[in-house]
Image (cartoon, rainbow, N blue to C red; front, side, top):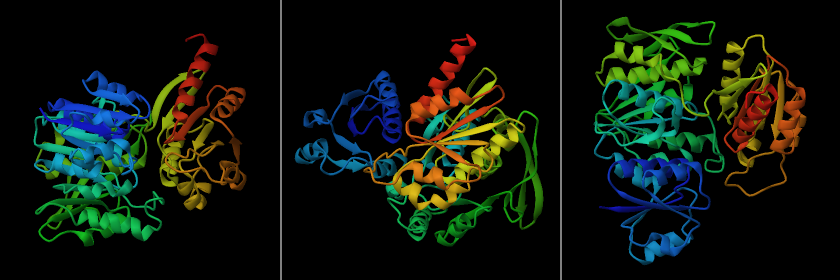
Length: 461
């Protein structure tokens, strides 16, 4: 039995790999600085997890895989190399993992987690038993990863640290392109260039699906390798797979018709319903159904199953309600994502007061995209901005307080700590309010704590 050691096993990326390896019969060990919930999950599946990095942790390993956050100077990396044990980056290992499978990779600045989860969910519902690695937990699948017996392997293609360049998929979805991760890609041109390189790595006779509603995504068609096929999807009339007649019901659900605009004429393929809100999710669903259609699987059945898709964790995740106040958790941290999430909230909660609690994610992103952030909160009635979550970056003299001072529509208030943000909410919330915490950092726990506080007040907890 091959023994794989994962350095950074507690993170989203390597914990997913650990789950796939364990379900495939590998011996798995790993290490991380703390024992995260994800690390505990893979421990329950049989992985041995060390807290802290030590040379002895890699003993017995046949292969070492490291996350993007782990440098060459890491003591376990050095020990493995000294012992002649191969050390791979996550991107290199993922490429090997999916190499002999019918791989479907979903890339883009926004929407890739939900789209990946939709495709994995639909393939599972259709009895295909796919393998998958998702950047979040798919609620209906109760997991972020699985090693299936089927031929398909669905994978979220993360552009951070150029991870996706280790992949050579058979089917590729590009949802959209906007400048992000300025710590890796200082300019938009560099960001787009990485996506172009990724598209050029499509397998021979592969299929590219690009969103017709996003000009930058459509430009990826120019990078298509010879012999591959390309299709577009979206709301735009030029799309090959076009979502038409989009309707929103009183409960916030969405119905739409999917048409195929082919050279021989247009025809309606299927009518579909979504339980999750937002026009952006219509695009995600169109992409997922287009993949199913290209795979030759029953589209009517897929559309029927789609109405039961309940999304992924931390994507418009309704935590609960207390004292007439609804609390929602969302991973949105890019201006476009924030705008889409708040627009979905406004459509669903038309006459209710919406609080946006935003924890900016990284100094570089907040500074680079500052002007876009200032106009992203128009659908909120109240905005609270907490201090920047530095993540992998060193502290600097830029603060969220400066961002709050510049925001005018609506006005924003600065909370130096998450506790201060919670206290402000507790003092001002009233029945009918909706609180949406927008964070890729640790603010989600504050939201959960707030819900418990409100329930205690209500006498339910």
